[in-house]
Length: 269
Image (tube, rainbow, N blue to C red; front, side, top):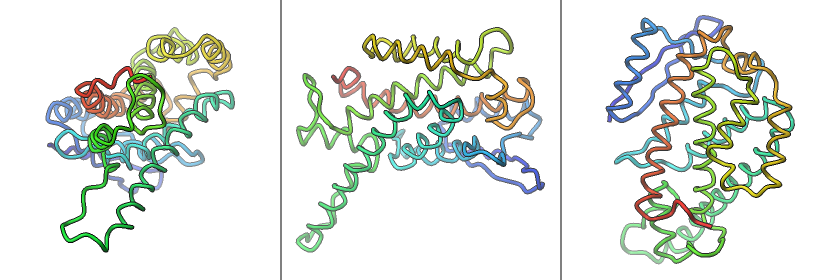
């Protein structure tokens, strides 16, 4: 593992340190970006709004566990920050955020039940306690497979199936943020959202959901709202911020994809 420290100034000139734990490959990519910025990053707290890109990066950093695993608690915190991002794009986006919130709640409930089970048997154990099944993506997928709560034929309220849905949505947001950071002119925010949606999520959604999504995309604000959300003034300032964010999201997605793929869980019903 490698570590990259990004420095940013808030409006009162205080220095904020963002620590990102990444693989060597991702570290080199982000170091190139930092060098391009001349060693000064523009990611900082943005007053007057709920979504904070610096907070998202901190959660993404914390989610990168050892041995290329993904820790679930900070992963879910990433999603809570991404929900704030989506909600800031307009009230109709609640169409997406409500479903994401349900999935976060389900995984957290499973984790609480696991903690209660471990605590209930603590006095009876002689050996060290077993690891918490919902500590990480890897431990959750493996535990649920062994316990037989994952079905490859029918829908079940398992953490594994729920994670797969979040995983697909994360790729949608990754593509959206990547295109927002690289396309300087042309397509609107709604068009970029729709294109990423059609590529990643639409194949898994019924027709009625796809039609509802179209309404959401048509009602989205213009791209200036996005610039305000990431606390920059121009598209040129947004580009390095988005490259750092997208690189961190991509690493989370890559690790999760691998864990799902080796267990043949990419198509759970």
